[in-house]
Image 1 (tube, rainbow, N blue to C red):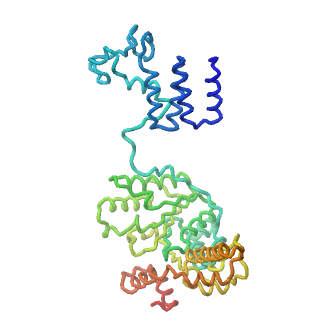
Image 2 (cartoon, rainbow, N blue to C red):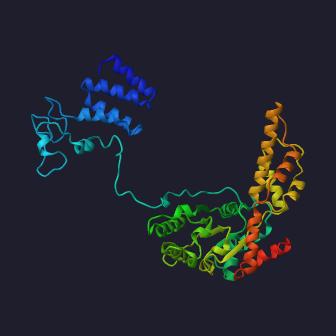
Image 3 (cartoon, rainbow, N blue to C red):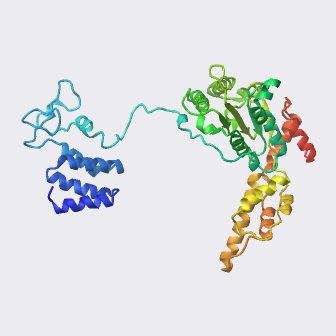
Length: 424
């Protein structure tokens, strides 16, 4: 079209494609000039950017409305009238209004322009979590990146890594790769990081699942989600399937208040057993802070039959955590050995917070004095004195479980630790 204004507006839209008012202004000029199709296309693009834009919808309605002398504005228009034909019994346009052209056939209009903008409302949307959309990752960390925790590494080596690296010896000793491993201990002590490191050690896919990914308010959805999670892990094999906060999914069925939770746990037992589908190449790890709340059936042989206690980091691990979280910060004169000694009983998350608080102190002092300075040992010691270990409440609860709970053998390692630390 030989119109300088329209051409200029077209170039402006190319330079600013997200400018909705500019698109609608050009659509109005095109509609007035008789270029209906181009005007509708511009309005459709505007609705993709702003689906609720009333001006764009109004222009589309005006472009599709029957005009005098225009018999082909809408498909199905009666020749010579420009009025859409209405079959008897069609409730889209009342018969008494269609004769004078005062009604507009929105259904026909949507059929013509539906490809330009998505519908405002949909029916029959599926419920439940989009578990097939879970992103599986290939971790780059290995157990070498885990500082200290020699006992945990030894247990993982015996349970998973050594049999996988030595298939001939596994056959000689009849070692099975079935079952899974349940890690428990205080919060913030690196259970998730260890699970990711195991996946990196195995060069396997890592798929992490939490309770919020599985639970649903709709009956039957949780069971379907559990099944789909395992199916995705089987498709990604070799895969480390990691359940975080496992007590929320595998709580004791005797404590479950709703039957839907019991059926979900039953489905979890079926998937772990691998009766209908093979779990070959799927290594199930789970983590919980409250192992005493996990249903005993989930910890029977062939399921999550191995249990590992992940305690607060030892001295070597505390030094490694401090070094990691102080790396890249302006630090001077930090004695990591002394800091490790003073943070006995701190979780990994607590130590990371110590480094953060020390950085805040140095930053605030630099802002106040106007002179940028290093993070000093005094900042780190002040942060240690300010922060209380978060593991204390958990250890108190665990002590009660060891002393008064039902001992199925799981608490033996924890009991030994509590005695060593003079908490029992």
